[in-house]
Length: 306
Image (cartoon, rainbow, N blue to C red; front, top):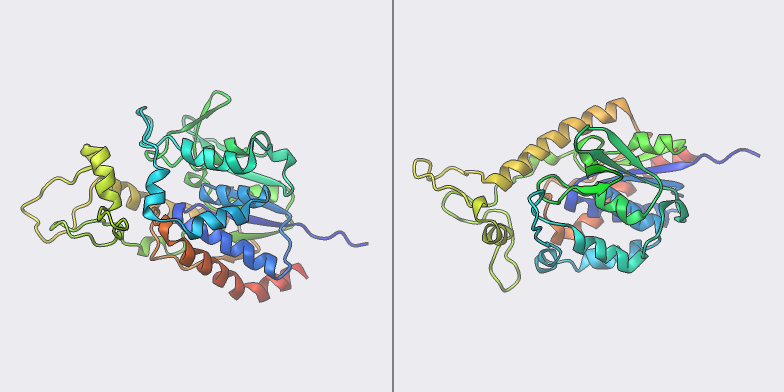
């Protein structure tokens, strides 16, 4: 008998853009394409972990109804100086769904990528509590506090391996389907306000009329934009905007380099130029774009696995 080839799914980083991974996985399952191994970085680790643990439907239900107010409920301000948010509320959501499940006991083999803050070493998490892997991999620098585990401070895996094809290979995948969320990332406008204080990209928060930036500046006054009367028509970035655009540039360059070094067999690239890192309220459209992008690759996928 011929040994069936193992198919690995490498889910890339991208914060709110990561909702599209749900659509990718659903499209693959609808067409009976098996996923034998799933790996992820950052939000890819979160969605991949939900799939491996068998709670993807619960995550999708949350995502499709997610509003800006829901996003704010998950924003638990950290009292430490290591990051703006502690990430405990997100962790507790998953704890309610999967308890304290260990990675080695998951129905689907799973791995997450994270980074040692002090050494820059790429860390593959393939055993131990799943919650630890999720929390470590989405520790976006400056936004979430680093995760402390085994005498290491761990941060977002997307900083060093945005699309973890290499981890899929290391775990025994013969064919790797990679989902790259950073293909159009530099096209995204990140300026939240213009110099005349007109909100140019963020929707209002339901009936409250506040933007995400209003919330952040209320909590952290030092984030407020400095007035610049010499440039009344220019868009002047504040700290969050500078950080986001810098991350976009870094993610674009690192992703391209890693995809050359560790090329997948199939690359799925959802068109997400209108979704920023914090547009978690756009889950419905983002999920559907992940599904659409996967369907366009079905002939190539079927040819590879046959």
